[in-house]
Image (cartoon, rainbow, N blue to C red; front, side):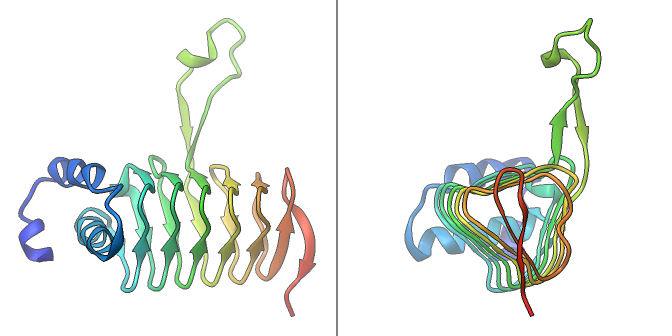
Length: 173
């Protein structure tokens, strides 16, 4: 099936992904998997993209094996997002790879453009519900992020973080 879909232009595949983003059950999981396998530069095995996950710029999104992305997540990979293996992303999470420029006081913020930075989530990471991960952050392997946290900077491996902004509340041993 992947070989058949690979014959289609990326633009068509992206439209199909948008069309099937709300499809429930195994049918939806399989269709989204096949489409993302064709669009993304790297898309691992046993990846579950649940219904109502919005993926913007999937051609800049790489995902490893054994990853689950639960409903109502928003992933904008315009500046590139890399997700490692064995990662669980709970519902309502936002992952960004860009931010608005705002330095010039003479120009409206909306007209100042964007800055793009790669966002990396390493292996064996658990991201709680409604977490926001800002652009340019690197999340080390083995970390846990508590629900409703806002990650504004890099997190070292095996740290447990929570809050807004996210701060270390523990270390996994």
